[in-house]
Length: 608
Image 1 (spheres, one colour):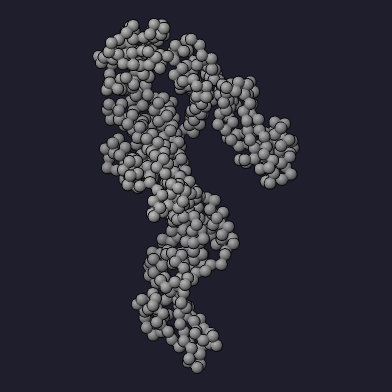
Image 2 (tube, one colour):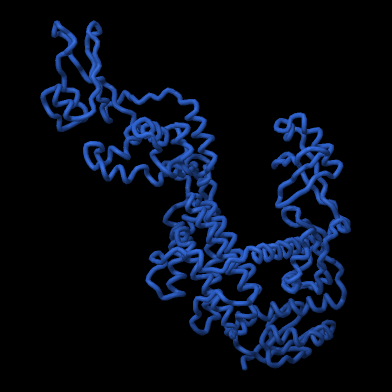
């Protein structure tokens, strides 16, 4: 049983050699009988006289008919118990063979399901031998001692092979009070309300993306279900809505764009397809959900946002074709996870019958470029960390800053993307450096209590080596290299790391310890003026939407600006007019019918 267990794919994987594997190694006594009235009667007849002991075990109706002279048409109690006969081993003829009173444990019946359901071996022999073992089963992880175990024991004993190829062992669904979900307690959200408000995909995503499919327990709350809407449904739907809003003519499926953002999102999608395909093949639904969530974030919060000006212009066919290709393909990939939303989006995009009737995206459909994906993901990490530094110092996004410095071993690979970083982080200049020591260092401390049981006597050697700086980190993995010794990898919890920066307020570490980001926090008058103008642009865009203007409408704009801000408005006249599609811009002292656009400024917008 232990050997055959290695042929089974388990989700979560640790069940194989953990909860199930350990149970198999112990092979506890298995009580297959139950003292019940209802159930499958155990087919064992025993002598009712201990002086003439005999046990008969029957395996077919033919055997019963041979010994009892009748062919039963009902194998359940009380009918089967009426079959008795004289004990052949009793020369006196006084003892009788009677069926034992017990019935089989229901899990024995369930464990017999693969062959019993088709009456094998008496019928359907060929069908069974070509359909066994089963491809996939799923149940609560406590069945490692119930159904899973019974299936495995019987398959090993009878066929010397596993009963199933893949098993998903999930955790327990708990109510919103942390107790087991119960109809009587009503400790869960009303399902009809959830489906009516959030949709079935939201509930489906909540369950599939949760720890329950990794063997953990899950507390069902309305907040958790709505979080699924925010994480997966809205980003995908928003990307589709953005496309539908700006696409003036039908787009086509296309993967040959030369724009770096188009190339990135297509290559990122190819990578996502590969990861999700592998996860679904392994029945790791939670991993598939994680990967889809990561991709939709890259699609909406990076590609669409960084490409917005191309869509606004309405003349960049490559942008529309690329977004169409991405949406069409991601709908096919996400269809098993979000079947309703992907159906609506795919039909709206293509006019086709159903996304669920299409083929899974093949390897040759999308251009793969892992180096570009890695580099652009690195750019996104830099921008994310820089934004966190801004937020920590309460510097608004639209306020430009002078410089951003990225220091790290691989900083130079960001050189082709400095203009992207500059625009995203809103800085005037991006400096790349391989000299991290100028800006800060990472200090490592070994947790002797956590590392000691695993490393034994080596723990002191590791502590000494870390203090001497004999360690390195790559992709989040910390390796200590004591003098004259092979590298020792420290596990999570066995160490702590701390960034010691020259300028702590303006410095932050990149994920995985790959480098540092340093933001110049000095705000000069020219920077403040430009930031003020960008803030007005944002308010004016809101005013356009509130007035019901189309995204492509040109306007005549008048701004009433306080005297102390007139110079800033004049200085950035072209910036303001260009961003809000104003063919003319008048800066005046006051407006009777203006709308408030912040900082004492009012505006009048007239479509031209």
